[in-house]
Length: 244
Image 1 (tube, rainbow, N blue to C red):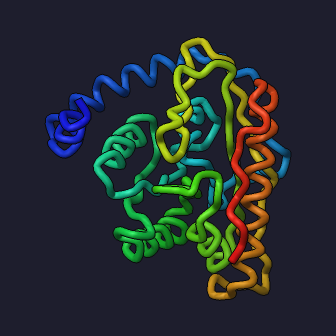
Image 2 (image 1 turned 135 degrees about the vertical axis):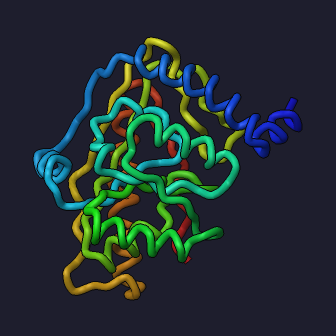
Image 3 (image 1 turned 90 degrees about the horizontal axis):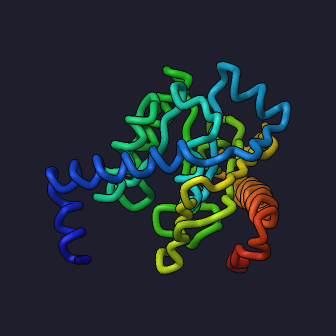
C-alpha cells in the first residue's frame, strides 16, 4: 500500500486522483468544524486588512486547521516545498483562493524562490505564508528563512496557530505530528502580535537573526500551548533544541 501511494504521488494521474478525493474530504471536514474562537490582536487586525505586505508564520503540522482562518488569501502567497507532496498542497492552495504559490525550500530552489518572494513583496504587495519548521523539522522550531527575509526587507511577522477539540488523527509517526481534526470538531485559531524587525538590523547580522528568530519561536510556541491547553493537550510541545 505504501509503495502504491508513493507511485501515485509521482504520476500526474495519481496526483489528480488523490487531490480530487483528498480535497473533497478536507473541504467537507473544514466546513463541519465549529470555529469556537479566532483571536486577533488589534494591531495584527490592522495589518491584515491593510495594504502593507506581512509575513505569516505557521507550524507545518497545523496547516490543515487554518483552512477556516480569516487570512487574506487573495493577497497572499504560501511558500511550498518542491516535493511530490508539495505538489498536492500547491493544488489545494490554489483551489482555496491564494493569489499565488511560491515553490522552493532551503534544499531545493531556495535562491529562485527568494527572488520570487522579494518581487512579490515589492511589486505586488503580496503577503507571504511560511511553514516555519518545514519542510522536514525539527517540529516547533523556527528555521531562519522567514526571519532573514523579515530583517532584509524590514517586514513584520505575524504568528498564527490553531488547535482542535477532537482529532481524527495527529499522525505521531510523521515528523510534524500533523493535526487532522475530526468532523464537527471545535477549533480555536490564535494570532500573535506583529513582530517588527529592528530598524538597524539586516538579514546578514547573525545576532539580529538569532534574536528575531527566538522572539518568533517563543511567541508561536506560547500561542500554540495556549490553544492546546484549552482542549486538554498541555504540555504537548517538545522542548526546542539547545542553541549551539
